Length: 302
Ligand SMILES: Cc1cc2nc3c(=O)[nH]c(=O)nc-3n(C[C@H](O)[C@H](O)[C@H](O)COP(=O)(O)OP(=O)(O)OC[C@H]3O[C@@H](n4cnc5c(N)ncnc54)[C@H](O)[C@@H]3O)c2cc1C
Image (cartoon, rainbow, N blue to C red):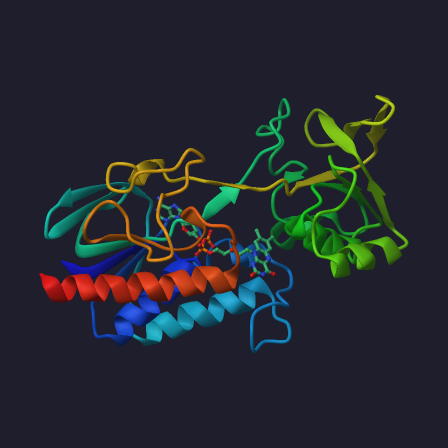
C-alpha cells in the first residue's frame, strides 16, 4: 500500500508527487496516456516564471525526471473508479487495483470535439487535436485551425512556420487569445483569419480534403481546400470515474475550492479538473503543492 496515490501526471499531479515524495511519503502516480499531461501539446511556453521560453515537452520531461529522482513510482494505466474504505482507498484501474491511504485526483481536462459528422472517423486522417504532435505531417500543405483562444493561436503560430497556408476559423467576431499571439498571426503572410464563421462539415472520404465553413454575417458557405483540420475549441473534464468520492459541479468539474479538499476525507483534487477560474501550469502546480501538503496533514491524523 502506498501513502499517496496521484491520478494524472500533468503539472498538478507531478507537483503533488514531488511535494509528497520530498516529505518521505511513498507515492504512486497513475497515468493513462503520456506522462506530462496536456502541456506536452504546447509548442512554446512563455509564461512560466523563471523560464524565458521552453516547449511543453521539455517542461514535462524535466518535471518527470525531478519526480522520479525523488523516488515516486509511476504506472501507465487508467483509473476507472475509486472506492473509499475509510483509512484506505482502493483505486480500480484497467491494469488491476492499487491501494493508498490518501488519493490526489489531478486528472486534468481533454480536448473538446467540434461535433461534426465523421469527425472521429477522420481523426488521424486529417483531423487532429494537437499541432505539436501532428503538425509536421502537414509540412508544406494547407491546413485550417478551428478556434481563437490561446491554445488555437499558439498552435496556429506553430503551423504557420510549417505549412503553406493556415486558415484560422473563429466563431466569435474577435480572437480571444493573447494579443501578442494575435499580432504575430496578423503579420504572417500565409495566415488568413476568418471570423465570425462556423465550421460546418469535413470534406473527404479516406482523408480530409477540405473544411466547409459558414460565414456568420452573410450565411454564405465556403469550402477551404485543406488537408489538415486542427481543432482547438476548448477543453472538458473527464471526472466521471471519481464521482463516487468527489462530487462534480454542474459543468463536470470536481467541486472544490483553493484548499483542494473534496467531500471525502483523504481524497484531494488538484489542477484543471477542479472547479476554478484560471487553468494554467502555474495554477495547476500551485494546486499540486496545496493538495500534497493537505494529504500529508491528513496522513498524520491517521
Ligand atoms: C495546446 C496547449 C497549450 C498550452 N499552453 C499553455 C501555456 O503556454 N502556459 C500555461 O500556463 N498553460 C498552458 N496550457 C494549459 C496547461 O497545459 C494546463 O493548465 C495544465 O497542463 C493543467 O495541468 P493538470 O495537471 O491539471 O492537468 P493535465 O495537464 O490535463 O494532466 C492530467 C493528466 O491526467 C491523466 N488522466 C486523466 N484521467 C485519468 C485517469 N482516469 N487515469 C489515469 N490518468 C488520467 C491525463 O492523461 C493527463 O495526462 C496549454 C494547454 C494546451 C492544450
